[in-house]
Image (tube, rainbow, N blue to C red; front, side, top):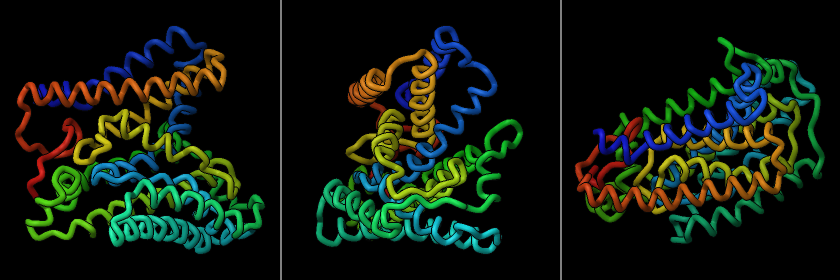
Length: 335
């Protein structure tokens, strides 16, 4: 257990604490209560998207369309509830946003599995399709006049924590439960580790992979609602670059892009680390260009450390299957 903690999320947690400690000393107002709330609000969307992305990456896939799909979900649901104060309309719009996201995810997974096309190519195409559909749907116009109740939720705090961040925590908790406490979660890991073994054991791996993309789509729909709650608009150009941030959070969190290794707590810590880094650099007055360079270097270091960690794990003969979740980096291919 200790070895797995060292090789897994504990290292990310230590890095997060050290980074936060550095900014407490170097960045003015970093440790203020208001700024901590700002950080939680800022990392909410990336956390939600990264939760879904974790499922996709664990099965050995990738989803480059989440930012564009988020825009499509936002304009469709935003059009429904614009100018309305009905609770029923608001709930319906939330469900529609999730359904649209789920449909995009299903298309990504189905096309990739049906025709054996790499998910990188499929979702790259969907990135353009969803963005174009969002712009066509509103004629490239931004939607305003969203329900006041939605905006009230976006600015609400519960026990000193932004309500939108509570949503992200709940989704991360649900993701952790599914991956660590259900048969489906074990199959997600097993498919990423050894798809052929899962297939020979009687499971349809195509369904498992499609389900992972659908879950990612649902989280995209939730992220779209949270975006509108925060900014009170729905724009067809929102979400640009969000897919890269979500992938970065999962990779920094210790997941392997080859699939089969990673955890939800690692993803959450990865999203927190990115949020703290961005916020701290901003408070220090670092320019946008330099922040991009530093963030890219952090991602590169995370990938290199991940490769080193894998070699170290093999050297230490950490070969016993372990349950996924808080404190583990993966499971075996056995279902």
